[in-house]
Image (cartoon, rainbow, N blue to C red; front, side):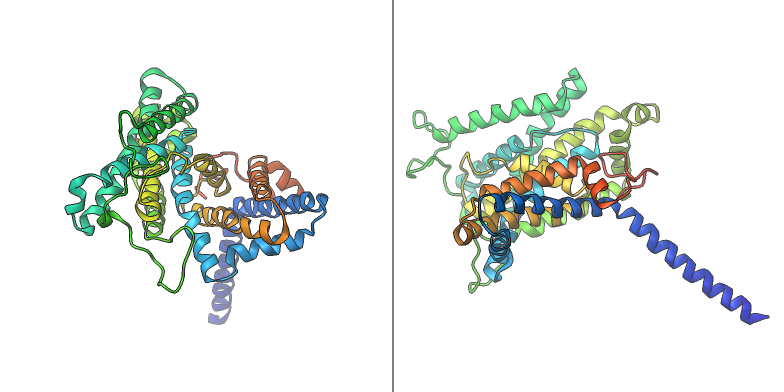
Length: 390
């Protein structure tokens, strides 16, 4: 009598395992869509390359070599991706709260100029690195948080839509910073000894340490800001899944009216979410100032905020997936010059491919139709039809 029971128990465990695997595969459907969108974008890019009379396989092989062809290429690809992690995380966090933060570029600028200003102060030269580095990173984070918090407060107090206010604030901070860095009379933040408009060099003690041995070089330099930003992604993922505030953020993003009736302070969540979004962008900018350039130039973060939108959508606003999406994005930009050199294909082709990725991810019905992927998510904020996060 015991043998049939044992067999039934074994069959039950096997069935449970199969059910678990199928459930996990079902939950990974959004990932399949993103991967298919990337594949389809490269196919379309290959067609465009063929039209201009160049073998797309030759071009893509050169691109791949530029991305991961050696230790220096891999290091350069990773280093190029570092600021994209922060800018994409900023956008993704706002998206989770139901907010469309189009101001990541302005928040990057605000964080970068604040970090450069604080890093070049005279008292920073007297601080040891163990204090100077946190100070410059916190300064950049606060600069981005303040600039991101302004549209959040405007939204809660006046009803001004964050899309409009963040776009306008982008231009405001851009032109103010250009004046601060370019001006010679009066001198505001410009390094008067430099032949190009930029701020003064930050203190040597405030420079983030590199991650590579002397035998391996990368362009730009790979620094410990990577570890900081990856760690922040994991912290945000934990906060969204395991904390009360994370639950409030996702709930407000799904339905602010129902959240209000459930007792959630919607205005508080909106204001904090926008400030946090700006803080992530500011941290990314500070890590670049501290780890890569050592100073600030107005054109440093051009288009980086808008790239963050594409990366956040590609990652389905998942903080962990943002790491992989940003690595892909930065690697493509890092490998593009070799493709131009070896295959005589313009660097703009990479931008076209990236634009196609964004198009196919945003219009995922095309991808689902071509690759026969069933739709299980009706929310742009990374939840399944049952409300479970992915």
